[in-house]
Length: 106
Image 1 (tube, rainbow, N blue to C red):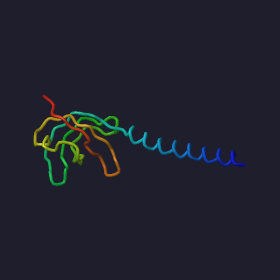
Image 2 (tube, one colour; image 1 turned 60 degrees about the horizontal axis):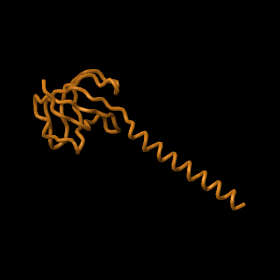
Image 3 (spheres, rainbow, N blue to C red; image 1 turned 45 degrees about the vertical axis):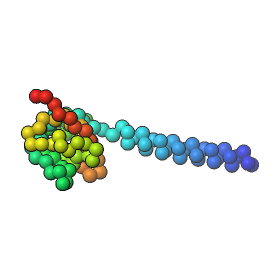
């Protein structure tokens, strides 16, 4: 009887660990696109930037101009009007967000 209970407990623990690991792994595999973009305007207080970007193919979006939120760990000083950047964008619960940016030479 004890071995049956122990086996059941072990099975539940393994299933719970697998489920947790699966959710963590899924977050790591979130779709993103890295593209060329040009800054049109930026609002440091709101950490948003209006950019013209190339197609975000992995996110199913064509080239256009739109406002993005900029993640807290991204150097917002890069977002100056007319700056040419390479940005990485993800789609999340609160819309699209720039999670990485670097200056690019034209």
